[in-house]
Length: 291
Image (cartoon, rainbow, N blue to C red; front, side, top):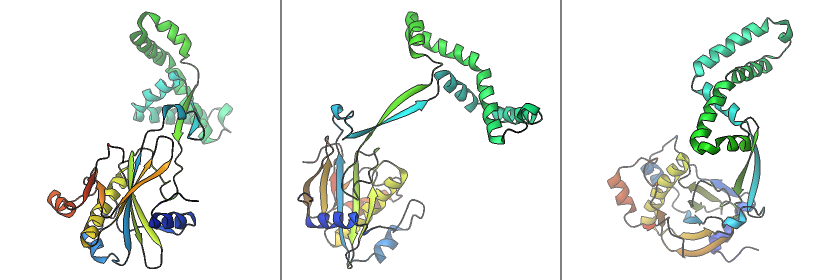
C-alpha cells in the first residue's frame, strides 16, 4: 500500500510499476531541438506537473547495514604494478611500438608459435611491466620516505606494495518507487518533469547535475515547463529521500518551482531570454533540506 501521496503521484507510481510510462522525447543534448519549436507544438491537453527530490546523506552508521547500502569487494593490482602501468600510459607511442616489436619476435619462436595473439600480447605487456619494476620500486620507496620519513620501512612492510590489493566500495540503495528509483548517485537532488495525456499515459524527463545529459534536460524541460506554467499553473511536489532511505512527501505547490542550478550552461539560451521565461517561477535552494 502506498503512503498518502497526492492523487496524481499515486497514479503515476502505479502506472510506472506496470511499465505504463514513457520518456519525453522532445529534445536532447545531441538533437538540441529549439525550445520555441517544441513549446509551439506540445499537446496543451496534457496534465503537466513536476516533482523535486532532495537527497539527504545516509547516516554514517548505516553504510555497513546491507538494508541501506551494498558493499562491493574490488580486487586491484599491486602498487608496483600500478606504477608500471602509469609509466607506460605516459609513453603510449613508445609502449605500442615495443609491444609490436616483441610480438613479431615471439611469433617466430617455436615456444610461442601456437599461442593465440591476444594471449601473446598479454604476455608481452606483462613482461614489459616487470622489466621496469626496479625503477617503479625505487620511485615508490622515495614516495614512502617522503610521506613517512623515519618510519617508511615499517609502512613499506605493512602495506606490501608487491601484493594485490582489496578495496571495498559502498553503494547506497535507492529504493524509491519507480520512476524515482532511477537515481544517479552523483546528484544531491533531481527534478522530474511529467505530463499525462488524454489516454492516461504518463511521460517524463529527469534532470539533475550529475551528467551533461541531466544538466541539459534540467535546463530544457525547466524552461519548457516555465513557459507552460505561464499559461496554466504547473504544480510541483516536494519529496526527500532521507538519511534512512525513506521517500518522504513534504508538500505540493500549485505552480512551478525550479532548482536554479544548471538551468543554463549545457542548455544554451540567452541569459536575458532565460530570465524572461523564468521570471514568475519560484526558485529552490538546493542546499537546504525541504520543510
